[in-house]
Image (tube, rainbow, N blue to C red; front, side, top):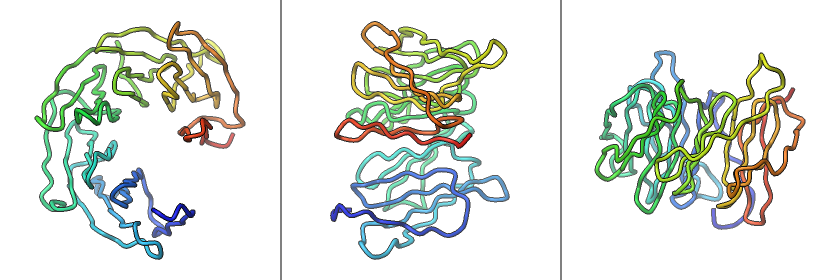
Length: 251
C-alpha cells in the first residue's frame, strides 16, 4: 500500500456481495453469501507487496449483511439487514459483539462522523444516527412516507437519502429539501443509485437512467445533467485532483 504502484488482488472464483478496503490497516474485507442464507466475511491482508494473505474468516450466522463500514485501527462495523449491528477488530474476530437495533430491516447505512464515531442507518422510513461507543441510537427522524431505498451519503453534517424519484436532504436531523429527479415518462420513476458530496456545496447523483446530475446545495438547483453510456449508475468516486469516476451497468 505504500509503494504507490497498481496492485492486482486475485480472489477465488466465488461471489462477492460487498468489498470494503481498509487502507490504513492494509486489509480487504469481502462479504460472501452462502446457500443457507447467512453471509460470511473474508479478511485479506494486502499490506504485503507480493501476496494477498487470507487473514481471517468471520461467520456471524446472522443472515444477510447490508454493509461493512471501516472505522479505524483495523476495526469495522457489520450492518445486518435484520436490523442488528456487529463490531469487529483484528484481536476479537471470533467474539464479535452484535447489537440488535429497534426498528425494521436496515436498507442503507453510511459513516456519519468519524470524529464522533457515528453512523447513519435507514430502517424502513426512518433515519437513525447510531453511536458506536454507547451502542445506542442518538436521534431519529422519519424521512419518507414509504420505505427508503439505497443509497445514503453523509459529510458529517448534511445527509442525502435516495428515494424513488427523489433525493431527501437532511441537516441537523431536519428535512431540508426534496430534490426531484426527472422521470423518463410518467409511468416510470427515476431512482437514485449512487450519491456523493463533491464538496460542501455540490451533491452528485447517479440514477437508474444512467445519468449523473450535479446539484447546488446553496440554492438546491440543478447545475448540470450528464447522460452516460450506461443503463444505470452503480457507484461514483472522486480523486484528490477533482476528477469524478463513474461505474455503471452496460445498456
